[in-house]
Image (cartoon, rainbow, N blue to C red; front, top):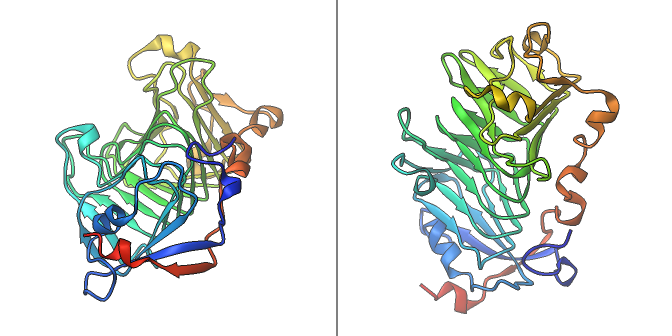
Length: 318
């Protein structure tokens, strides 16, 4: 599948224009959003932009506009490069980071919504195709990660919340991620929103780790054809014995697709699982176990190895 923004064959993936963000004033910009706004809008962009965020706590809301594809937003390590805001009034207005542009990459950042309990408070909203997150920490309480539409990839990320904290209608592969539930009881890790049997969307969790401080379901159906698969993943005793929740709608038992494959740990015992979830066979699991599930071979790209300084026209744009 080709990128939705331009033909990837026209792009030199080894080289990016480097823009530095540093709160101390030693970078090109002091704020992340200022760096993003300096990039010229171009839906047919054939140039990679690499925004390097120096360590610090950045208190701002950040939006990647739809007309700025091929941006990488990168810290050095998530523990010391933190993007944080606090908003829980309206779901789609609440995110600390919103991604509307395709072919976006986020690396080694903590992204947090500090609003707390009592409202939908999104830390990250991904509303574009071909987005990848590596080594990120994503934290809130309710609806932490609004994993909306498109093909997405998360690797070595830590994702924390209590209620439906990974939700939306994307086709996403979570590889070697750590999911941590804050729910005291009856929370849900996922609320996937697939609306029909013909949609390709769904969430696969491959080689992940599930921990928490209370009790949680693996998922409940936001959409009637909700599809979630956990494979080769460790379940601590935070996972409720039933495993999955119908969200007060028994009719969804007939249409959801909830599967487990070769998971282990005290929460992986399927003796008391709801009968409408699946213990997948090798053949049933195969489609979920590689990057083919998200068409990743066509759009996932390596980190650039060469960098060019940003043109003066960009640095003097604000």
